[in-house]
Image 1 (tube, rainbow, N blue to C red):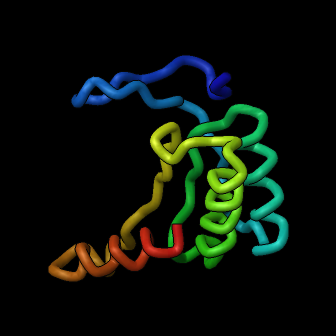
Image 2 (image 1 turned 60 degrees about the horizontal axis):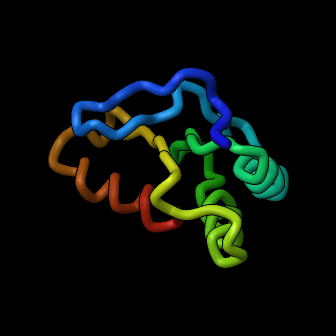
Length: 102
């Protein structure tokens, strides 16, 4: 089951939920529980950003659920952002730093 209403079809044909769990202003201990609960109830899109400082806890929640066989990584959409400050040659480095904890 996927929560999030209608799906949107991306240019590569993949269907992505239009609604997901936002993690802005979520404290580390709270966001881990929220992400696990959301994914266990069917959410498949998680929205985050490096400036939220909670990507490590989000990654832990995802890894635990994958390890327990409750979800598969290829079902998930993890959305992050690149700060305008890094929209130069630093984009690849910034993106890498965002992805590593997830």
